[in-house]
Image (cartoon, rainbow, N blue to C red; front, side, top):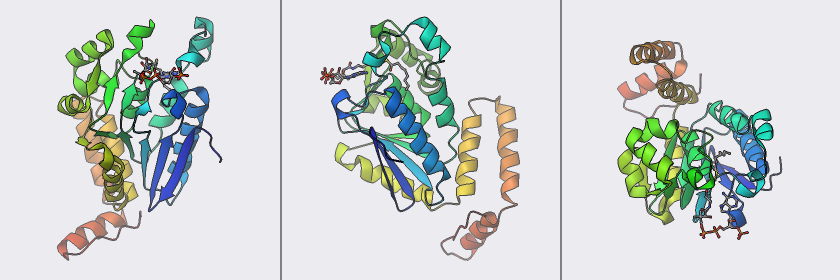
Length: 258
Ligand code: CO8
């Protein structure tokens, strides 16, 4: 499908999705959000794709929901259409790993979009924030929920109540991002991580993603039971036999997603 607000490129089993509304700092309008969800679903369904990278520009991953588009909406409209429910639901349904490669601003819906990915690699120029409070609203797609689970109550309250931005170093310290790299190396680093993931069995990467995500929904004991059962089920796959045989034979495993 031809897109106007994003650029999609598939190479070496990695789908790179680039948000591309430079004049609006990649603000998430309805068109971009619709195209993004479609591109993610197409990548999820494409057998050639084994990992997805979501990125923006050097200046902005995304500066949030499109304020111009939202500003005149009424309660009846946003409640009636359940604004942003669909984006959340479509993105969390993606089974392949998604890496957010974040440079520059990741604000409001931009920060929330990065948190909807499986992990975040940030450039040293990245700035994260939930500045919705300055607009007379609050976060709408995880900024009070996912952020609190990722960085704890105190920092989440600070971000959501003052609207201040967190730089990359603070975001790494707080556990929001997995690593920080120089801006020029951002895509190289994200691609290298994606290619490492692409080498694994896609059965096991999907299972690992599912198990980690369940940790946010279940009690510890239920989560460990879920993990153990999924671990057991891996023994029904050829890839488990291949992975363990390859280790014992001191060779590289050849996974076949079976
Ligand atoms: N919406 C619409 N346009 C935007 C947005 C935005 N969120 N952010 C920037 N732009 C536009 C500006 O209007 C400007 O356009 P123009 O040149 O036509 O005037 C252009 O992008 C460049 O922006 P600035 O001139 O402001 O650039 P600066 O470098 O001076 O400032 C900032 C950069 C600090 C990022 C500043 O643009 C800013 O504060 N932006 C708004 C950030 C914000 O408040 N975000 C939260 C939005 S609300 C939200 O996200 C609710 C969550 C809903 C979930 C959505 C899930 C899909």
